[in-house]
Image 1 (cartoon, one colour):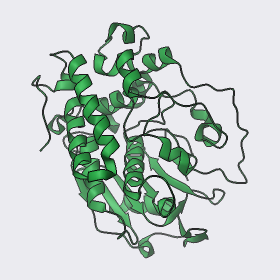
Image 2 (cartoon, one colour):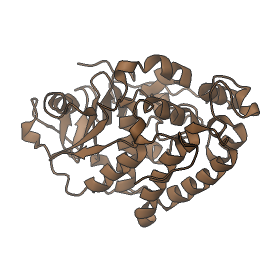
Image 3 (cartoon, one colour):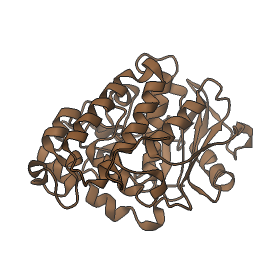
Length: 350
């Protein structure tokens, strides 16, 4: 029902036997000049510290080298070697501005993020997910009651190696009809049941449809596998899919939570933070909600409070965020409201 492109619907999926693509080692990730141009719209900005309204804490090359890893070269089976080949050109901040039209932005009247469990989600810490989303975006979050799989439209679930498997559109159609309150900016469902987006695909981690601002994703393939914890993976997938609903496309510039993922290892290798390009996009996307205290410092303060409260699960993320705050405090100009907030002083989150 929807075309599978990031402008309308973004799938994180494993390639099927019927849709094989050749791995190409010819594509190389963008170099530093291209990365700086993507965030600041000028390669010279990184050497000068700021340009065209891009603050130094986002476009300074030296600072970015310290905190962000450039996108790694492709390996066979990676997202950009398969379904994501069409996304290799990336989405710069300038391109995001053109695509993120005012009618698609969060406002004071429409700013709530709605989370909807589907099926039995007792093994998921839903309250922690909601708290993380609120820290990440700075917007109100509503956690709705669980929706039974029997309430979804046909077809009936099919079977996969992970048990029952639900067609994603049966969930998103339900969300559009029943789970979009007037104050909601977007609605995201999550489930422990495996998903597929089309009969030709074998599975999908999650999808997001910015045209109607709904999405869904599954934790089914995160359980009982080595690597990151279920909570870490759940948080990363959730803010990744929600990022698409704010028109942020897959990242090709840095190792970033917005990287596409074609398999679990690739997903685990992406960090739980935004790169400078996508950080600037998110702040722009949230500029229409002044009550959310959208500044870089306030956002990092919220995230640090969440990471510290989760004990060892996010110890590495807490250390990274704490160091990032200190470094940006040293670089940001005193009058830089994008970092310090409108009052010019760093503020926390209550």
